[in-house]
Length: 224
Image: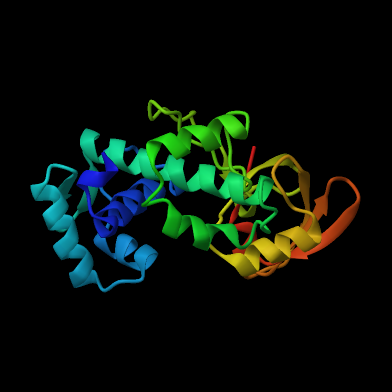
């Protein structure tokens, strides 16, 4: 399926999926053109032109002044690309020892050229992982994804305990910071204090040390 869609078009379809995933939208709920343009670092007019082309191809439902949503065909392409991306990240970390803050950029390139045969070999070689190194779920070969119930760490109530489910993978500096303070998938967290006016959060990590975590970083951490 990916071979029938240009890499640039694939990026737009994946961006639509990720915006839906991150903001907990319904899969057919429109995403604004500005949000897609910002995610892909392109101008709004460029994004509009591509989304209109994808609409003509039946991959996107483009609604003027509201945004765009993936069609069923667009979802299949997006989920296949997400599967490639997250399997590649897992392979780079587990098989090659690449640090988790460096794999996103590499996977962004390789995801477009990964063959189905190599995808299957990587999947089997890793023991059929269900999540990538950042905790994000890997779609099944059939394009199935688990229901999402996570919340951003920044939205958690003070004193509430939570477990890290996943962290955003596209900001290397955030991943490096989280590694230093010990925040990874599976780690238990508790907000023990907040600074007013969007200041940092005091977070107890794994019941051991309390760290001051900037609000912007806390927004990149999703917990259960």
